[in-house]
Length: 60
Image (cartoon, rainbow, N blue to C red):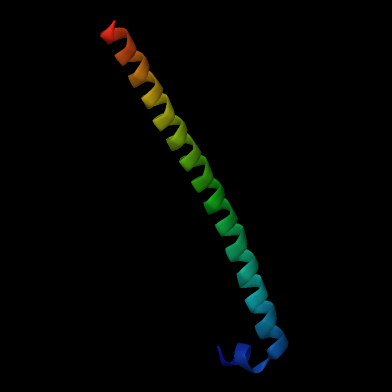
């Protein structure tokens, strides 16, 4: 650990590599979150539409 702190170039390269790795992980995480929210919203919208359609059939 002390060798990393003493060598400035090595320290900056390590930080840069960590940021890059975190960026790759977060990109995948937020992509999967976008997919899951989209699927959830589609499900909610379809549920409301089916409910309204069913209510219109029952009322007649």
